[in-house]
Length: 122
Image (cartoon, one colour):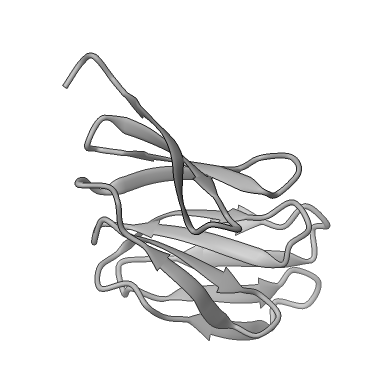
């Protein structure tokens, strides 16, 4: 679960492969985001709240347009379950960690990794 920086939206994901975006003021379900083939393990809103990133047991990361409730891109460079996602303060990059013992830095405009850090401990 994650709350947008303006506190207006809540995103939740579970083992049903879907992400739900809720209005935090009245509890109304605003949209359901689909794409993953396995349970959701991590979620993060971009600083401006326009993009939601979601990681999964299926080794992939989806970036969704919050306004359109549609996928922007599916990213699959991890070889293990995605465990966490965090956006940079300027929203141009995000980082993901995985059970493959890596941290990947992604450039959103390019839709690919710009840096991979490998843990020395497997």
